[in-house]
Length: 494
Ligand code: HEM
Image (cartoon, rainbow, N blue to C red; front, side):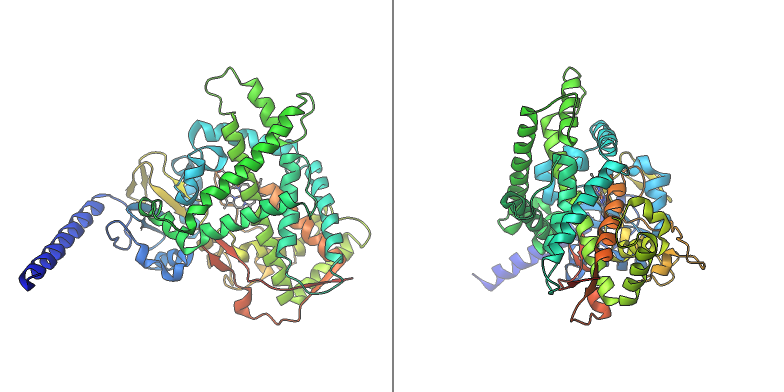
């Protein structure tokens, strides 16, 4: 090609890009959205994400732009709220405006607005009300769930004993025990730890989590209109979630065949009965699609969150044997060595309760919260946020808010103790989020954390050959979830 021809093409390309850029800039500034870093066409603020660490990047930008700013996921603006005051003002004081569910392109192709987690409006209200009351009936905060968890604690203690005080990575066995609690509530029974189907189900959770958190998954969440059409490992997320749906659907069919409307055995039975009751109501959301996708949600939301918190907790107790020793002392004093721990013991164990709160604060499992969106055009601190705009209430910015936690970057149970050693609440403790859309399983999760931790420490001292450094105990960000480093531990009988 003639050099003049090349020059002309280059000049035209540069001019077009410049015009496109200025048009884009003009367009996005027309919104009265909060300020934020300047986005690029199509990819938004993708290049601002440092080392693939989204939550950390958003925390840093909060320092630069203040507690309310706009970050572009591709061409879509997301309003980010940082620190306790801004998050509470959005999710609680103006809760109804921010109660919508934001996009999560890695999984949206499977859920398509169905199931409890992804739904909005009337569908969400029906599924949420039903799930809360049903899980309560089967034991959220009630005795029967206490019994189910206690049963699982006994199996877990047995299993840990079988390692004969040798060091091993506890990740898989903790995931199995926690998933069995949700299985017991949803399917009415637990799985044997060696069950092949159970293993496959856990593999699906793990792989999906990994892929959603991988660079591929994160880029897909930022620019789905491009990534949805590009081959790559992220495409497998849909296949995996559909396999999980098939597995769950099989269990639903088993329940259908043996259903006794007068004697519901589990969450599935209750949902099937509700479906029959409402079969003539055209507005009812109780149908197979919502059942299967809600079951999928319960397993995902209720499994790895609790398991990751426990895994992180054990790592922290290895790092701080003095804290572990104080919990041992409290267990011996309040529960003794012979009785199984009960949830009623928690109120008599302020130190253990404070340590569990601090484990949750420090491990900061869902740092960016689940995505929200605005349900109508919303005025907030002088800005106008249009209906349907994405919202990120940055939980890590609250759990590390220095106004509420004296040593926010240190593991310090005193954050939850007063000068007399009594348990002390802290408003900024919101690992389960706040407002009407907050975690549905808070009660179940808190009961599990207390009973698993106390049952294990009643029986064992946790030891390791490794000296963990300050950096080792800090959570590792993997996409939308935080996880601890892999580590080995020995459970030595007391
Ligand atoms: C330590 C454990 C857990 C943590 C840190 C956690 C955290 C969260 C967070 C941050 C959200 C998003 C709330 C929002 O959108 O504002 C959420 C939602 C949810 N969680 Fe949990 N969760 C935990 C355990 C559980 C358990 C055990 C269950 C099982 C019942 C569960 C079921 C759900 C469901 C169904 C939702 C969606 C609620 C909705 O959209 O209305 N979670 N959780």
